[in-house]
Structures are given as structure tokens and as C-alpha cells.
Image 1 (tube, rainbow, N blue to C red):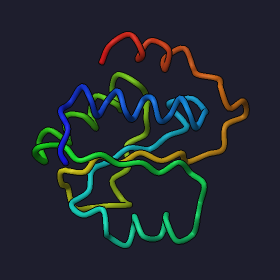
Image 2: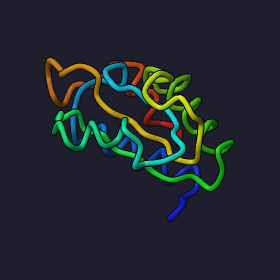
Image 3: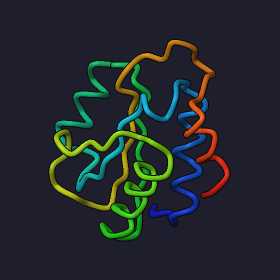
Length: 114
């Protein structure tokens, strides 16, 4: 079920907080279908990379959420994994965190705004 911008941002940021690492350790992108090979490879391989995704109301909304997470929070843009833009916003940890609960200063600033 689609969610609004603020809910998706809060859920993804909360997910990152639970899995650990700084926001710069995470990649974010948009996708057309959560059953695509990208998502299946993450599920089947049990990569333990914290993959999460949420459905936005429109592809434009999903892109705005992705851009906010990149520009305001410092997540890394992922364009190669799911090249077709869509309504699903996904995030996963690209690198293992050195200290699971640590957040960069930039990530801390991002917590102040939705």
C-alpha cells in the first residue's frame, strides 16, 4: 500500500537506525517492481544488507524521496541496480559499519527534518 513522503522517509531512516552504520554507508534508489531480479537477488542471497523498500504514490514522489535522502541525509544514489524508475523507494547498506550505532554528523543533521 502506498505511503506518503514523510512516512517513507521516517521509515527508511528508522530502518537505517536499526541496522546501523552512517547514512553514507547506505544506497537508495527507485524501482518499478519489487519482484525484479535486483530484489530477488538480495532476498535469495541473504546478503544481510538491510534491504528495505516502500511504495510511494507516484514515480515522481518516489524520486523526490530518493533525492531528499541523497541530498539532505547523505545516502548514496543507486542507479545501476534498478534502472527503471518507479514508485518503489529502496535502500540497502553497501558497506558493513565499523560501529553499528554510529552516525555521521551529516546523518545526525538529517534526523532534524523529515
